[in-house]
View 1 (cartoon, helix red, strand yellow):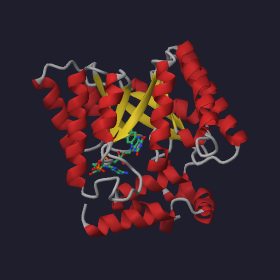
View 2 (cartoon, protein in one colour):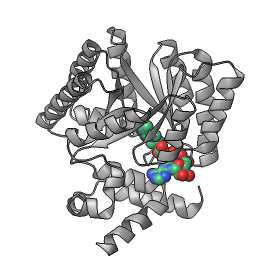
View 3 (cartoon, helix red, strand yellow):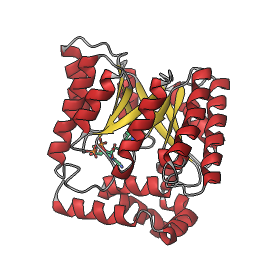
View 4 (tube, protein in one colour):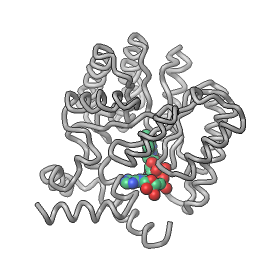
Length: 309
Ligand SMILES: Cc1cc2nc3c(=O)[nH]c(=O)nc-3n(C[C@H](O)[C@H](O)[C@H](O)COP(=O)(O)OP(=O)(O)OC[C@H]3O[C@@H](n4cnc5c(N)ncnc54)[C@H](O)[C@@H]3O)c2cc1C
C-alpha cells in the first residue's frame, strides 16, 4: 500500500464513527451507491439475494448490520433478529449461515451480556444445524472475542467459529491455539485502523502472514474459510491445496456481497466452495465506510453517483 492510499484509508476509518456523517449518509445512502455493497435494509430483501446466490452454486453468510451497541435493549433486539434469521434460513432450506459482531451483542457494555446473547444464537443454530460465525472487530475486542468463542466451543457448541486477522502480529499464536481446540476459522487480512505495534503496516507483510496462516490451517485439516478477493492469495491457496492433496471440501473461499462477483461465480463453477457475505439492515454506514477505505476507487464511484443524483 503506498503512502497516499494509507493516508486515505486512515482518514476514512477515522471518520467512520461520526454520528453526524452517519445520519447524512443514511439519508442519501442508496443514491450514493451503498446498495452495491448492502443487500437491502430488511431480512426479506437479503434472503432473496441469498436464494439468488444459491441458484449460482454460491452459499451465503448473512450479517444483520450493527455494531458498537451501548444499550442492552438494542443488543437484545439484535439477538432476536438473529434467532428469526436462523429460522428463516432453515424454513426456506437456504444454503446459508450467519455472521455477527460481538459489539452488536453487547460486548462494549459487558462481556457476560455478549456471551449470553451469543450463546442463545449459537444454541438456536445448533438446534437447526446451522453455523454461527463471530466476526472479529478492532483490537480492544480481540481477547474477549476469542475468549467467548472458546468458551462456547468448550460447552459443546461446535457450530461456532471465529475470525483471525492476518495483519495482527499475534495471529500466528492465536491460529495455533484455536486450531488445537479444533475451532473453525475464517482468515482475513483485517479491516480496522490499528497501531503499528499491533498490526503490520506493510501490505506485503500482511500478505505473507495470511499465506502462513492459510498454510497452517490447511495442513491441520480443521475446516477453514479463506476470505479474500486477492487473486494472488486465491491462486496460491488452490495451488497449495492441490500440491498437498487437500480436498476442496476442507476449506471454502469467502467474499463480500458486491465485490468481485464474477470471481465468486467462476470459483464456484470450478467446483470450489464459495460463500458470499451478505450484509443487510438499516445500520450499514460503518460497514460501508470500511469498504470505501479498502479501495480508493470506491470513493470515486460514490462521489460520481452523488453528483448524478
Ligand atoms: C467474507 C469476508 C468476511 C470478512 N470478515 C472480516 C472480519 O470479521 N474482520 C475484519 O477485520 N475484516 C473482515 N473482512 C475484511 C478483510 O479483512 C479485508 O479488509 C477485505 O477483505 C479486503 O481485503 P482483501 O483480502 O480482499 O485484499 P485486498 O488486497 O484489500 O484486495 C484485493 C483485491 O480485491 C478487490 N477489493 C478488495 N476490497 C475491495 C472493496 N472494498 N471494493 C472493491 N474491490 C475490493 C480489489 O480488486 C483488490 O485489488 C472480511 C472479508 C471477507 C471477504
